[in-house]
Amino acid sequence: MQKPTVTLTAEQIVFFRREGYLVIPAVTTPEEAGHLRDIYDRLFELRAGRGAGDQFDLAGTDEEDKPATLPQILDPVKYAPELAEALYRANAQAIATQLLGPEAEYMGEHAIFKPPRVGAETPWHQDEAYWEPDLDHNSLSVWMPLQEATLENGCMQFIPGSHKLDVLPHHNIGHDPRIHGLEVDSVDTSKAVACPIQAGGATIHHCRTLHYAGPNRSDIPRRAYILLFKLPPMKRAVTRDFYWRKNEAEQAREKRRQAAQAA
Ligand code: NI
Image (cartoon, rainbow, N blue to C red; front, side, top):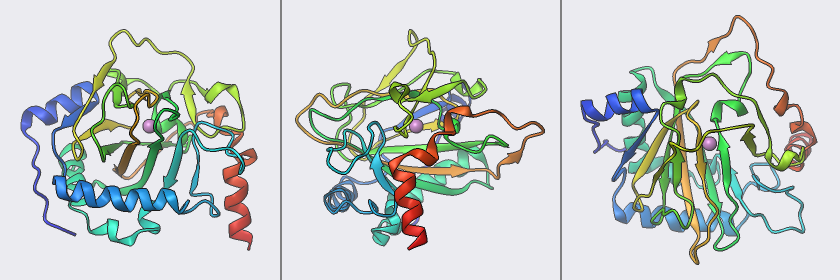
């Protein structure tokens, strides 16, 4: 692991605790952002992880003959081990340690790609809605674009203070049980804050912060590379009913994953 080069100020830490998100102008160097972009594009061109269920269409039905509108790769470092050496990772870990505490540990990573002109919106959601209903999570995502992220191509947007809410009811995008992506049932977006940033900058959000990224209406791809960090999750006294997750076994991605594991 490289030596981190980013230290948050006390004001940034207070802001994150109050608002549930934070914007960092640079979490890596422009050179590394360019290098990561090359690796990233190669992984999507090769459809890395497709057969194992690690690459799938987050916003579509994920059929083989249909181009994905919101392709995602889970655990890209599994398919490009050189990603483990990035300065980005060292800085993201340092930021997580400052925001969550010394027990903050790496939780996972993913890459979400919005193709030019056709990239779909990522609807409003809370990340914890995807996770275990019997655990309380205290975690965050560091979201880094590998080109400028703008309102036109799908930068991140947040509802300030929403990390203090419980996990709200969600449903599959378009109420289609074949689609893996989730959308919160209702949200007041009047106070939403859009966060355009440069390549190699980052936005950080808590696992209960309501967030959204618009469709890509530009002529360039919108690439986001996300690292997650967590405190050890706490067992809840009462398990929540995340009924929106009950369709997962029927989704194309889960079927590919199970077939790969059985082979
Ligand atoms: Ni999310």
